[in-house]
Image (cartoon, rainbow, N blue to C red; front, side):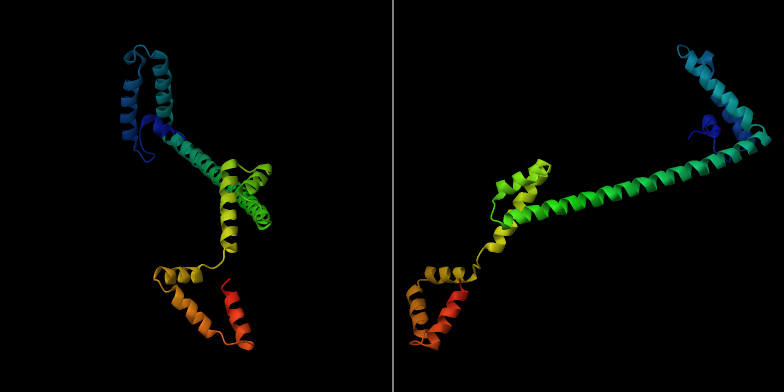
Length: 199
């Protein structure tokens, strides 16, 4: 918000002498005779300079101007704060709605993945719900990968068996496993139970 002080190029706390010097400088700069080819613009600026000086050079008029300007500034700042607050509230509401929508789409994708559908099907379902293609692809890939990781069997025992094979201990491992199994009865059931845990 430009002020009369801005027009003369001085601070609001400028003295009367500083205002007078600033006026003379501005008047020379914007005098139409010194702005050939831009007379109309210079004439308007020169008039603004004269009006500003007429008010600020008069003590009583300057006091009234300062009081009115201060009141306008308070109103303007209050308006700006209100707009900023309302904008923040609108953004918060929009963000909450977007998060809720995202959570709903993830839940739908998880449901279809749990039913055994592949990534393409999940992607198509999300597209059908007006989900943006890039976001739909991201959700579908993540959800299907997560679902697959939950369904995968443990790999610790398989890795151990592979190590034994690579070391040439396959026959020794088989022999030891057979030796640990009692002839029958409860021992056989216990072995089958432990063996079942591996799968």
